[in-house]
Image 1 (tube, rainbow, N blue to C red):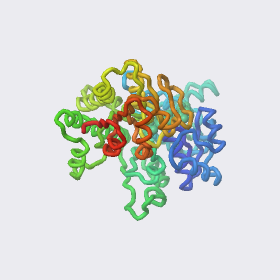
Image 2 (cartoon, rainbow, N blue to C red; image 1 turned 180 degrees about the vertical axis):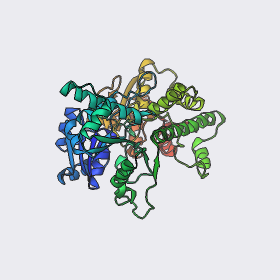
Image 3 (tube, protein in one colour; image 1 turned 90 degrees about the vertical axis):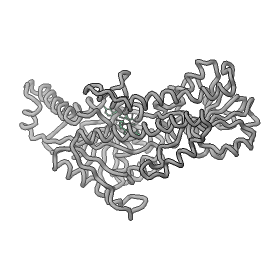
Length: 462
Ligand code: NAD
C-alpha cells in the first residue's frame, strides 16, 4: 500500500521504516531539512536499536523514501500518518500546533483520491473531529487562494471529489525497543466511524497482525481493538496514566519501606507474582520521566478539569513523582551531609536505557538541584557521551567513560539502568573516588558486588 508518514521522530521514523520493511511503499515527510538530509544519506537522526539497519534495507529496496515536500507525500499516500510531536504546554495541555499545521497542509494538498488520515500522535480526546475540520479548512483556504472562491471545505471537497476519513491509531511503542514493539505489539487500536477506513487500516497491518515479522510467529494473532475515535484516543492516555500511576504506587511503597526497614524489591516481587497485579512497572526508583508519561498524565488531568472533573488519583501520581525526583538528593544529603563543593557523578542521563532521548529525564532535575546546592556535577551516559548529543545540557561535565566519571567524585548516582552499568569495574572506580558512595536510583546494581568493591551502597526503599 502507499503510505505517507509525516513527522520522522521516534514514532514516525520507526513506523515508516517498519511499514516499508513489511512491504508497503512509504514516503516519510519532515519539515526539518537537516533531518531529511541525514535520513536520505542513510543515517538515522535518533538512536534506536535495529532502526538504522532496517532503514538502509528498506531504502535500498525502494520502499522507503524521505522528503520535506508535504505535497509529494500527500499525493503519494492512500494512508497519511500524522506523527508529529505534541509536547506539553506550561498549563499541562498538549501543544497541538504541529498536528494542526500538518492537518492544514494535508488539506491544502488533497486531490480527488480517497485518503485515510491517521492520528498516530498522542492527541487530546476529541482531536479526530478537530483534525477533520482543519483538513477541510486547509482545503477551503487553498481554493480561496487559487480562485478567490469563498466556499466551505465541504463544498470544495464535494466539487473536486476529495474524500477522506480520520482514524485514531495511538502508538504504544517504547523507546529503546521501538522496532521490536512495532513488529510484536500487544494490541493495535483503531478508532473510526468509517468502515472503509477501518478496512484499509486492517489491510495495512495484516502482516503485523498475523505475526509475519514477529519474534515468535506462532503466537495467536495480535488483538485489534476497533472502536470509536474518542475511545481510541482515551485508550492511549489511560494506558500511560495507569503505568505512571503504577510506578508512583511502588515509589510510595518504597518510601514507606525505607522508614520501616522493609526491602521494596522483595515487596515488589511478592506482590508482582499476584497475576492480578503483575510484576512489570513495579521497580522503585527516582521517578518516571521521558517525553510521554509526564505530558500524557498532565494532559489527561487537564482534560478532566475541562470537563468539570478533578482527577485526584492522577494528580496524586504526579505529586508522588515530583517528590520522588528529589529522593536522590535526600539520600546524598543523608550520606554526605553538605553537598556544596562536593562532586557528584551521574551514571546515565537518558530517561531510560537504549535511547538517546533526554526529554523530561529525571537526570535534568538532578543536575539542576545539585547545581543549586553548590555541587559540581559530572555524568557518563553510553549514548549521550558518545554521540555528542549534549546540546541543551548545562551544569554538567559529560565524561567519555565511567572511570573518568568516578575520578574524584564524592558519590555516584545511578540514574539510568543501562545494562552495561552492571559490569563496570567498580573496584577500580571506587579507588578513584574521594568517597566510594553509590546511590542506586533504580535499585539496579548488586549491593553485594558494590559493597565488596568498598562502596557504601544506598538503594531506594531497601
Ligand atoms: P519527535 O519530537 O521525536 O518527532 C516529531 C517530528 O515531527 C520531528 O522530526 C519534527 O521535525 C517533525 N515535525 C514537526 N512539525 C512538522 C511538520 N509541520 N511537518 C513535518 N514534520 C514535522 O516526537 P515523537 O517522540 O516521535 O512523538 C510523536 C508523537 O507520538 C507524540 O504525540 C508523542 O506523544 C507520541 N508518542 C511518542 C512515543 C515515544 O516513545 N516517543 C510513544 C508513543 C506515542
